Length: 176
Length: 122
Image (cartoon, rainbow over all chains, first blue to last red; front, side, top):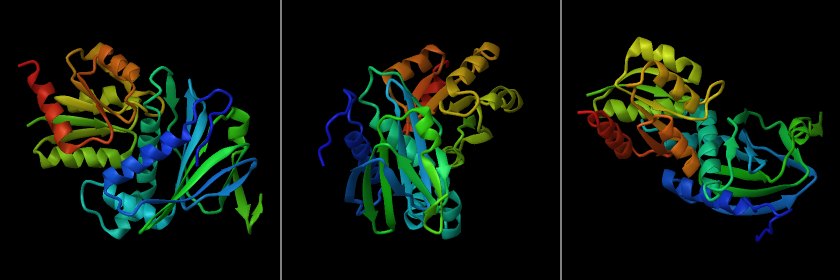
């Protein structure tokens, strides 16, 4: 899906996807393929089991999310760790690995913007399927791999008031 | 082989760097997860080299580097960061880092860099 730049700001989503795909290939994640792409807002997007949220500020403002289901997060942990790990260890390390993967992918997606001073926040981790994300506008790409699936989400422009309301808690399918 | 201190707020990154270094025969004498811990850990462990991330809570790696070099100007620090923008790399080198590696780091690259940094003063 070709996305035009908005308000004169660069469209960062294609470079985010490219960075993610390159990195997953580097990790050795076979069969990582695109499924649904979505551009929407204002509305709510469900999150997977493990989500890393990184706020970008400075010359480029916005939020990046990598949301991964349990199966794929454990697979990523096994690929990421230098030492061989078992299933229990993979489950223990999964959230930290997703955080670091999100950090690397986000940083790499911004490397072409040398002329802008960019600050990356530390990843904020959301560890529940009972959470949703709401934003005025977002771009989302779902991926599948043999071990599970994930979503990459970009919120191109985001102020602090929007950040405060971005995450909602679901109770029995209703927003709390 | 060398005594190395690993500084990164990510526990899995510290584990990975430790694994790479120990497999090559280096001794990881200490770890820190926060820039504020760097100086006290350096005093306690007296490493030959420090690997340091930049994005850390409370005190980032560049500020921690500057603080460390004020007290120990001979300290050898290799920055290991996901951000690879030229301005950031230059700032780290100007602040006194001996080298700068962009994540994801490959074992041979890390080990080669450590070796070069160790040999630089010989």
